[in-house]
Length: 290
Length: 290
Image (cartoon, rainbow over all chains, first blue to last red; front, side):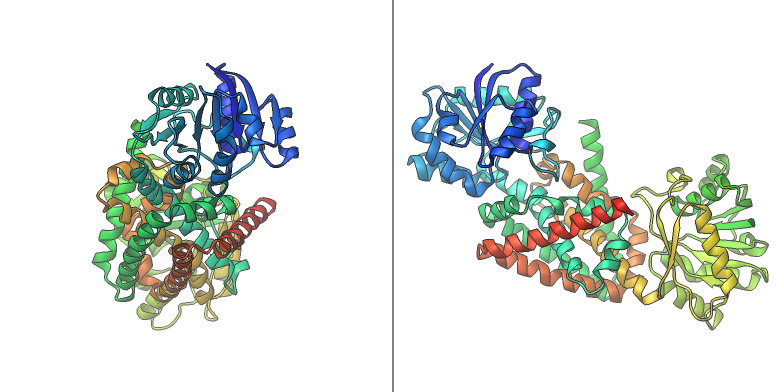
């Protein structure tokens, strides 16, 4: 049971955590913290939080669990503000999509990896953002990756694990570097392709006609291009290295594919498409039977 | 009213047309034609067709409407087989995703653009294929693009337009070249990206972990990579020129994006993502209010 949860950044991710813990009767009090008073008032109105403050230090001061769900570019300032004010029993975790930068931010503030920090990442979300979009079931059946360091307190890791399990999530741990590589491949690269595709088309002369004749497949494919631009700018900067490596890998693949089309290499095209279809069908099959 | 419809290629596209016309009481008899007798028997069992033959010429011989829904690579042979056997009042149309190659195939067989051919393309489909996946509502509210030539008979164009309208589709006409460019942008390029992405990841050392931690966004994004490989090989070959141009355009965009990430150009990244999000949100908004 969490006595007092501080949610710093009450949007889709932070709001859904608060809702899920409330629905599970796993939290007594939720303090919201953010920069926009109107959003916080709305969160209180929706029953997502009990009260709010705009000061992260005040929010964290008497909390036994602190969840940070702000864009990665804002993490360092949050750590700097809350670190001196944390209660001795407080555990801090976050929902950032890149873990290397979060750890680096904490280290740069505290001077070492703090035992109270359990870097985390719920693999869930929608293309919508804001507390209005939050819902208690967001994490049900989804994976949450925690990337504890050797310095991380074991009890802290256990408490964060329990918190996510209360939300119906399946918790796994891995190294920071492995997380950042996996996410570059499965999330960050696809987002770059969706943003890049929509931007390419929107800058074409015939863009009105192009979007008019786009079918359902296109809308599915580009859904993630409706994601929050600030969040994604920060993810790109925070996971620069792993994402650059994935972009380079993808570029080699696409050069090969384009070259196969140019020289009408039917066999090579078929083998690429068959390999991809097989991998995708298997993935869906596994997800279904999981 | 269509007296006798010949559907050459009874899969998702051909099967759904037959079902829709039957549901609208707009056809008296449907003859199916294909290479796999088991599939044709199944189509008859499902009530999609009344009877079948494996010979396209026999199927088309006494039909007043012929719909060809085979992979683009098989179009030329179909034209060659049916052209000498068509009834004087017969109209032929197709569901191919590229129109330039279909017209070229017909011209190469007939010696000129035949007045009875109305090249068409229903902008509808799912990642599934086969007659089992077909359903009467597939075309409801969807667009069908027809690309008549100056040689096309006006009555033929009218009859094909009416046929699609009976299925609940919205019919528009445009030039062959414009169609092929628009489709390269909205459909063919996205399919290449989805196939290319899944193939890239499947060939990585950590591919099991990668697919394990892929979330819903990834599954949406890569749905189209489950499409029929033979169909897509043919589309690539048939629309080589327009697709190559789009791939080159996209490559320029991605090089710029990768370069912006490499040099941590926060402003440029934000502007790309904002422009893409705005274009995508507008497109969804328009589709919703349409």
